[in-house]
Image 1 (spheres, rainbow, N blue to C red):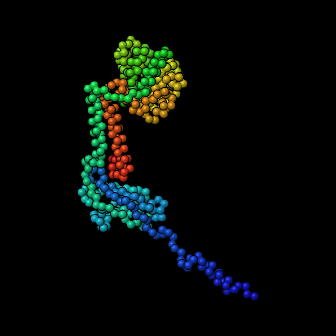
Image 2: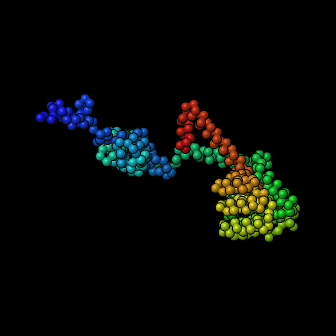
Image 3: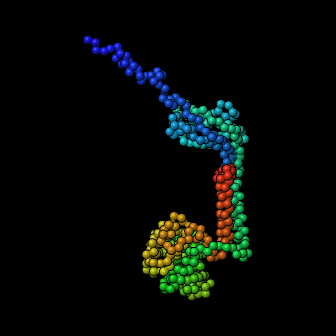
Length: 397
């Protein structure tokens, strides 16, 4: 008895051959990217490397990554940089950089010689088509011409400072915005006077050569004059012996100018400790024992600022703080009634002292900000109208 027909055998043969042939009998194509070179780099450029006192022996080569670098089919391993003396001339490999790199500094060129460069991506088996650029020449650079705008702006800034300083020396009335924190200082001293309690002034923990400490001592002179007039005790704890000596002279002179030299007490200008947290603990002890009604923290502060602000808040004192250390401002803003933020500390010292050099630097920096903002606004406007050259120049300087 026959168990298979010829049709069944033919069906079995076709089934076995089906994976080899497509729907129309064509063979299957090879796997994509197999033995294919990686895609070439794009936007290749080379330029003279600019540096101070550069001898002209460096050229910087930059490019955009191959499409097969990082996730592409070619799996780029490195980029090969070749240098030649002319277009179409076989070049020598002057360096290789790993995948993901977009620049190479060639430090072996001769000044004044013209060179051509090509860059090819290499995947371990084959190279991409090379991208070519040139000619480029290395030149001696005794001055970075690309930094010329910075020189111009710096010269403009110093000219403004000198001009406003000279105007202040001649008695010109230079306007400086009134800072709310300074008004709060007078209110705080008045409150302490009404309550019959002292005023605590902490000039920070910086050294005497710290610009924040110098600005703080200028404000201290103003506070001392007010306390002298109101006959309110002024306590000044310091963390540096030299700062203590300077504070003694500042407060003593302020009391004399206010007409109350006999009210000055040298025992209230206290040296506590150079150690940061020992000083913080001692100042907190003064707050808890002597209960000052007004706490003024003006100067250079670090981690101890949180301890001061929280302790003063618990004693219900009115608190005015100011520092240029940005990391400490959140603690003062949170726990104090008024805070001089950043350069307001310097502006306050200039406002109170009327010192021509301080006023000149303050007004010069303010006008320089106006000029910088004007340049940025001009660049934005030109970019909106499609003029991108200025914006590109500005951001590369």
